Image (tube, one colour):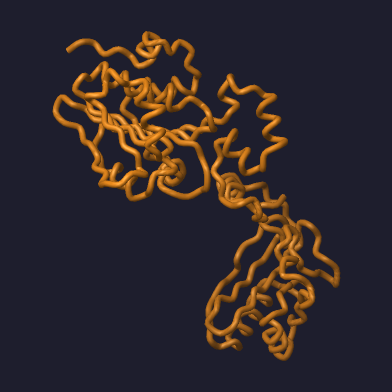
Length: 346
């Protein structure tokens, strides 16, 4: 059997003499038979360079190999990918996920390795990605720009990342994109558009969430140092059968003390008072939303201290209670910034 030509040497031979570092690293993982996935900023040359080199190298070293290239649109398949592969057309399979018909995967055969080259994977339907996942192939390369934090490719890059060799390729890894162009886009584009175009980031919301999912995940992975403070509690009161919650904040750390459902509101009153006494809380250490809780607070007052819970005035907008500092009241004044805050805040 002839000695295989390395993928980087092959790329150089056919004219790709100035591969970027990220392109070389992805190609080397593909050459090694690893399941490889890359989330890329826009206009990075993944179709014209990485997929083209991967396909030609595979067919050069394995003349009986079979490749399936798939993209979200037929135009991407014909105008960008097939244009550079005409001499290999008898051994290639190209599909677009937006055309009718069943999608059947390909599998390795004796003397004929198979490969999946999936472009713009974020736009390919989950049921198609599930079909491709069941394929037994030697080579597998999925690449795409980013978008909303949902779908099969997003899960490959996050929850299933331990099964893949994953890459994120922002514009800063592409020398042909000038810093001036990046800064101009930062100034003129919506933040969400900029993060996709240049940051290769996944968007978990439309930019209107108080705390982003990415921020929460980063804090869970690397929590901030605990800065102790005066403990304060907050009661989320609920009606019969709904969930009632008691939380406590100590400095910049907040946690749920207890959560329960009960059709007997007096049972909830008893649980709250037992927790208050166990935690050594006084009435001015406890906050709660007025709403339905008004009736429960009256019952607590009848049962004895500590029951004078500081209420959020009913005239205030609901949004007040969701501000980063919270709206708990201590000694008749808004709580200190470190009290009652979400644990993500220092």
